[in-house]
Length: 307
Image (tube, rainbow, N blue to C red; front, side):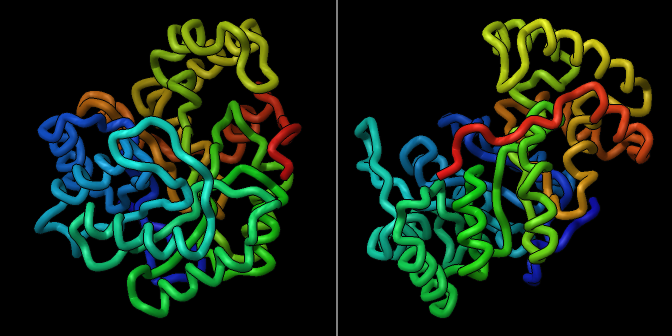
């Protein structure tokens, strides 16, 4: 499987990777999915301390025992919670970040995290303090690199200017083209990579897209009405066939921009994972087809999430 460099780091992640949030809490099912993904060549697993209030990290850590050297593990910090209790509070403080890494390492059962990400952020945060915490963790050898998970343009700009982040995880798909307007080129110019989450747009860009749109897009999606969504999804299917599934097309779309290092998708079953792995057999996406896909979707922009 092809790999792409994460920023200017020495981390190289596979073009498609597994987001672990959807694995659930059934260990045997989760391990089966993770094993299948790794055996298929995926080398990046993305989790977070908040997923199932720490249980996800425990499951991922247990599932990858004996395979640590073959994979890159990403986790996230910034949400203060108590395991077993509902709810959490935002806490990007140095104290919380430096205690959070210890908890995550313990749950994962590893000595270091390859990519540690701030799980959100606002312009009101003490960004300098958060950066200082990540830099210290890197010097201490507890993390290899750090990044942020955010769709807030102004927050991203602050980290681009002030920090040594190697990546930004953000929602990006052919139906959510907001990053194209003001973020992707900025990150490319600064040699910072994108981890594209949600590349299938809640499944609406999958082979089951029409059904998913009726379930999840009945009230519209971003700046699309339900009618527009259904029209786009029908056209989307015209670009699929024996050599390319709808899922593969969605993954190819986000990976077309060179600053996207990997498309991170979730899977709650091996069958779902297999459908996304069809990307590996897909015919390459041409510039012409890419532009046609852009012509049937909207170049929407960030109206909210500015701060």
